[in-house]
Amino acid sequence: MRPFIRTTWARPLVKPYQLAHSLRYPISSSAASSLKHSIQPRESFPKNLRHIRNMSATTVTSEQQFERTSGATDAVWVHLDKYGSRPEGVKPLSEDVETEVCIVGSGIAGVSIAFELVERGKQVVMLEARELLSGETGRTSGHLSNALDDGYTSIQSKHGKNGAKAAAESHSWALKHVGEIAARLAIDCEYRQLPGYTISQYPRSDPKHDEDIKSIQEEVDIARGLGIDVTYVEGLTIKGWESGSGQPDQRDGAVWHNQATFHPTKYVNGVLGWLLKQPNFRCHNQTRVVSFEEPGIEILGMGNKHVEVKTQNGNTIKCEHAVEATNVPLQKLSVVVEMACERTYCIAIRVPKGSVEDCLIYDTAEAYKYVRMTECDEKDDYFVVGGGDHKVGQEETSGRFEELEAWTRERFPQAGAVDYRWSGQVFEPVDHVAFIGLNQFQKRTFVVTGDSGNGLTHGVIAGRLIADEIDGLDNAWAKLYSPKRLASIVKSAATMVSHDLQVNSQYRRFLQSDITDIEDLVPGSGGVLNPKTGAPIAVYKDENGKVTKVSALCPHLKGVVCWNGVEKSWDCPVHGSRFSKEGLCVEGPAKGNLEPVEVE
Image 1: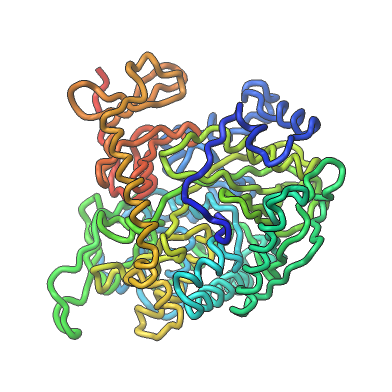
Image 2 (image 1 turned 30 degrees about the vertical axis):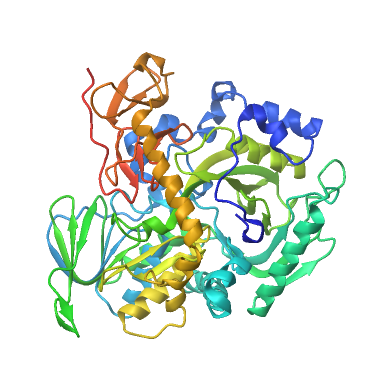
């Protein structure tokens, strides 16, 4: 999704048998051999390693897994920060509450906002639908960067130079602010500053290389004009990728100085631990919110001055301000229609310590690769490689991890075993900038959404921006991120129309079936059965042949869900809501679960 070469929101479908042809160059025999031996069935791994390849398969039930994260896979962050390390003593809400601010969501956005408000003396109540930190923060790759996913070329075209400068300043502040908080609270979260590299997706031998490099140089020039410390380096090389003995030669690129990375769940856990010790903060898990209501009328500061946050269990939180830090807002008609929802994939592959430079890497492909390092053990580090993006529920999920592994082995032949494979979800605003501020049509309810691949820094920005707005303080970034902005959305009208047509086309699934009979399902898989009479049914058959049926209609806007074979989930192709195979909602904008259907 590198902006300066973006042509469409569509993502290429890569299937395993197409893998060799999906690469930009012939795969070497050594890399092919490594890949062949690395994608053997799980049962063929040594017994003592099976738990590494699929940590959730034998240790917890599906219901437990989807309470603590949003997929059947586990991200690499659990390697050194187990699910059991989440703060203890947090319980579901069981009473009505009054407070100054109610924050819904316990990821980096919710926790950052809570930290800023509690520091300013506000009374804060935080609610989480499942377990703490069970959303997308724990499924990111942990980049902290001002080398933005959509790029300053595109941002400036939509928001002007002042808007692009605000984006540059806010993300630069955020990546440093994480380090400041980690140091102040003594959080051991692997925070460090390092360089980031943008390289061409094409090797030097490809005719498209020079044109791609020109785009990188243009992005560097614009970013430098906005105050970003970035340079173009001809012949740029990365330690560990020698571009010699068979590796593709992709030298030349941009160097983004003073970028950062960290361990995201260690950091958020650390801030949560501090918050839970403060007298003006309380937190409740297993408390699903179903509505934000601003009753009455407020005119010129007179009349209604509160929000009522209502939970599925029937409790009400009365507050002066509410914040939806839920990755995507829960309202049916909101900024949701101004965003595309996409799945993105990551692997954590072992490399010998010191064999690869500690840096961030991005290429310029549409479904671009993004790379970083994190700790593994005394012998190895983990090379975290991401990419393979596609629209939620609209393309095959298979083959994505294999593509990432082949890409890595071709460039870094010292790579060893892949220990973790997982996917996450991102929301892409049509005008390339997150929505942070007062929600549309509301006066006291704030949202933070539209991470656009930079959700960690956007979440930290939201902490300062929303706290300032609640305090009535001017903030130079507010105009850029306002959910009520119009000018940049109008400039993106053509993209929105195309997006809406594409989204609406997903309703054709009302007339389609994935399977004609439950017997068609392979054990461990799911599919939608569309009976001749009645509504479509989402059917899952486990490894023992047990069948689970739930309604296939997403409770948000009645889209028909699709089976995600990687995460063992039901994904809605309309606005990205996701559910466990038992129907538990793990990703909005849906507010409730898929309805159960009796097994005949």
